Image (tube, rainbow, N blue to C red):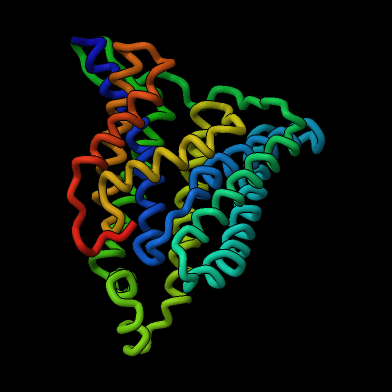
Length: 298
């Protein structure tokens, strides 16, 4: 029983990271109705840039570890913010009205490969590791020996806070009503004085900020993010949101959380090498049998 509960607790941490990525993905897809494969790479690129910036500050600038981490975070924020500006200007704005929906998919796939290779070249194909952060275990049940590390608790709390704040904005503010209006009928929203391009730009920035923060949290917990992580996460989030919801960020986040829990349970009871294959097979099955609402366009 204790082993099962420990797997569930570990699954909560995985679920929080997946939920954040899915929430950010739907913020964009709900407006553009285009498949975007770049967010997983932005997640990995943010974590890798943070690690490389920290390593540079520590080894080359002789900073203390907290100062080096602050420097790495600043570098990651600058790079991701600049990337969001360029992606909005050179991918979403010119390709939003393209006849084929596959144009954005191809462009963001190329962007994913570019970010993956940029990180690999910047690191000279080496892995840099952060020291363990907040790794002290916190017991979660008195009678059973189950626990989470402090870093896991921080990540879960951050995910809950970000998604709660996002839902508050989406449901109770003018910004959320504007997002839903552009998502449902961008032409009608434009007639009412709303600029759909500006709304899409802000949504891209918000989604990239969420994915970048998720990469930062993952880097703090795992200590390293590999070069190929972004592509795998991007595909997983695409499948997860397709099975959950393309138009409702909260439903997509809940579906992603369920997948994170399933991954943890699989890793505890079955061969880890088959974990991704099993998860993708499950998602493909869900997509095959699910009936999509009329307003959810792939």
